[in-house]
Length: 497
Image (cartoon, rainbow, N blue to C red; front, side, top):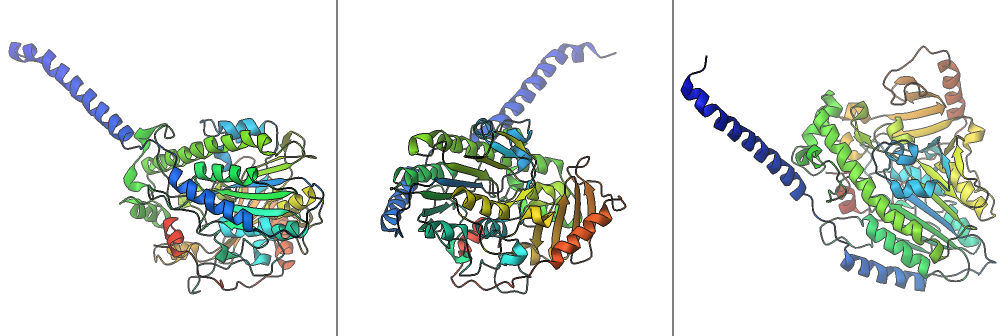
C-alpha cells in the first residue's frame, strides 16, 4: 500500500508527466513542420529562362509552313511511379489534377519503359528503337564515359516532324541526361536544358512551377503552322525537396536518411548490399517522394487547364507519360537505373487526341511504340527500322549495368555489374541476366514480384520468346559523347559522387 506522502504527490507528478509528454509531442510536431520551407515561386530564375526561351524561339529557323496539322504536346514526368497516381489506384491523394485530366483521356494500363532510367527511355521515345538497337544506355565501370549517348545522325521523331514543317521545341528539366551532349536534342529547333537557371534556393534543376510557365510561354509564342512541344518535369527525381503543404505527414520524415543527408549513403548501402532495411527510412522516402508528385501535379494542373486558351484544342494531341519509376525500398533498392522490376518498368501513359477514345486500354505498349504514334498523329509514317511491341510479341525493359556511383562502390558492384532484361507477356514476367540470373513472376497475383515461380508451366514459353527477341536484334555499340557532359548536373542528381 502506498504511503500517505506518496499518495499526496501522485496527482501532481502524473499531471507533470502528461504535460511533459504533450510538450515533447508539440515540440516534435512543430520541429517537423517548421523544418519545411514555405514554397515561393522563383520569379528571378523564371524571368531569365523566359528571356532565353523567347530569344531562342525568335532565332529558330523555319523550313516551310505546312498546312495546319495538329499540334502535339508530349509531357514526360521523370521518375514517376504508376502506382503513386490516383488514376492507377493509389489511395493517398497525390495527383488530383492529373486524375481529373485522365477522366477524359485514354489511360493505358500496360505501358512499360524501354529502360529503367532517363537516357535509354527517352532515346527509345525519340527513335522508335529498343536500347539494344539505339545504343544509348549504361556502360561498364571500366568504360571512361558515364553512358553511351544517342549516336549523331539518328533518325528521330523531332527530325521527322521538323522536315514536315513543324516547329520543334524541347524544354527539359533533367540537366544530367537530357543535356544536348547525350544526343537527344537532335531534330529540335529549340532545346533548353543545361542553359536553364539554377534556382535562388540552390535547387539545381528547374522545378515544376518554372517548367509550367516556360511551357505556357512557348505555347503563347507559337507562330503559324504546327508545333511539337516536348516537356520534361523532374520533381519526383532525387534529391527530394520538402515543402510545407505538400508533405502531408511530416512526422515520417527522417532528414538524415534522405538524399544529401548525413546518413543517406550508409542507410542505402546497408539496404542494397546487406539487405538490412529500415521501415522508418522507407516510410520517410515514401513521404518525401509523394510530396514531390503532389507539387508537380499542382503545377501540371495549371498547364493542363491553360492548354485550350493557348490553342491546344480537341483536334490536337497531348501525351503524358513517365520515362521510368522509382524504387523506394522494394527489392532492397532505392532510386532507379539498377534493375528491371515493376516499380521502375511499369509506368503511366495517358493520351488525348483524335482517334483516342476516353477509357482504359490494356494494349501492351512501350516508349518505342510512341514514336510511331506521335508521327501518326501528324499524318507521317514511322521512322525507318523502328520497333513494334506488337510484332515482337513481348514487352522488354533493358538494364545495362547501373550508375557509375554504384558500380564504383565495392559493396554494390557485384549486384549491379551486369545486363538484365525483363520480358513481359502479361501477366507473366521473366527476368534474365547475362550473369545467368533468372526470375519468373505471375504479376496477376504478385504485382510486387516478391515470390518467384521458376517452375510455372508458362516459363519455358516466355523464355523461348525472350530468346527469339534477342536473336532478332542487331546491337549498336555505344559511342563516346562528342561534347563535354554536365558533371555538376550528374552530381546534383546522384549519378556520381
